Picture 1 (tube, helix red, strand yellow):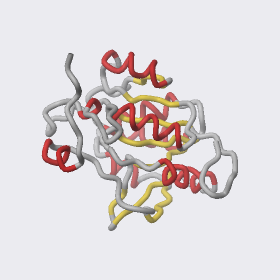
Picture 2 (tube, helix red, strand yellow):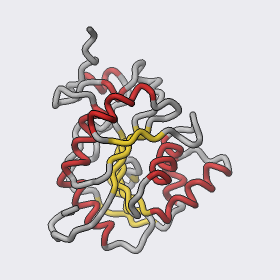
Picture 3 (cartoon, helix red, strand yellow):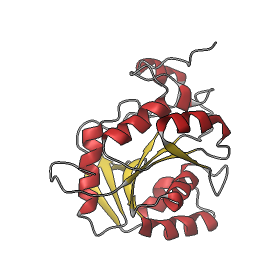
Length: 207
């Protein structure tokens, strides 16, 4: 992987979390059509690939079946949660456990304006970090679904889940963490139909 301006080769896997329940949206967010005209989940995988992440993983929540065909088409490995129904912390735990690399670049599928160059720069920062996670911070808020995690984070994240913790940010804040100023605009995530309309997203095509 050629990450960021340093030009240093650095192997990092990539993962998209796409198994959320999307209660506020009223439909699965992963399949909304993004600015590229493709489903958000496919668009996110393509952006990770453009950032140099390899291999690609697709966090599928409790049921990988709806994502099987897309994962094959995109060259991604579907990964079901090991703690089904427990939210994005469980998704992170599952893809970090499945990753063959020491470092994993993580994004959520509901971010329609991901930037490959910014993600590659974040990975380059991780390659120089002694910490278990490198997480951008914007206006005092961590962005744990737009971050890079080392395999060392797996054990404490799993322990947090086993102890009943379900808040992703709380679990990530307990890690040996490098906070970095977010470069560029904050990652936009869409949770409601109104936010999807403002972002120019469209429902999936029906046959």
